[in-house]
Image (cartoon, rainbow, N blue to C red):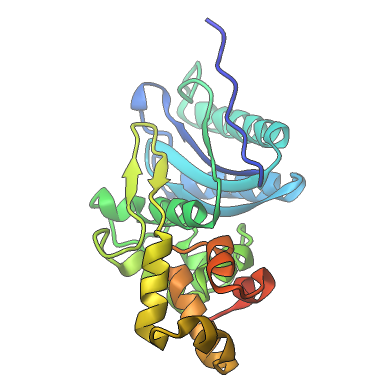
Length: 258
């Protein structure tokens, strides 16, 4: 039976995941994790694209990559083959290490991008292994200290800065502006904040005349309000469309102190 074609993202953004064959462990200890990350860093550096998030989870891993689909397939092939050779040599085992072809889901907009990053970083916490900010084997700490493999600036700009990025991870699922639903393959879906919810938050902050009050507000107040909307799930396009403020301004807006 022929494989179904992969779904494409117009922005070349993909949530990628791969699992050990028969759901067996593919990371036995820290040495395996370090080896995988060394390979990941090498092949990201050679690829035409960027990595925005990663998490290693015993018998599977998650990545969030910005690459054209053919480049992503080439990148994943090199990564999986190189790691399988290392793993099979170290543990004297034959055969395939990974179960079928890697999974990929297209990221369609800013809200889904934030949902996917959040989902990837919260994997160990939801599995009862460790709190998201204490887990050693994810990219979360690249966002709070020095990036090693990931390009963190793109996601931080969308989130509204480091403080908003952390709040995005700390909130209970019931309190975030979008909710996540993971499939069996580990894909995170996002339900976006509605236009009416955005207008309601703006009215709460600036009153019924928010349409004139927001553009007239001083830069710090305006940017803080925009950053809060982004942290709660509103996309850059959505905010720009509703408020009439330019997308470039919305994209760059950060909460004071970030």
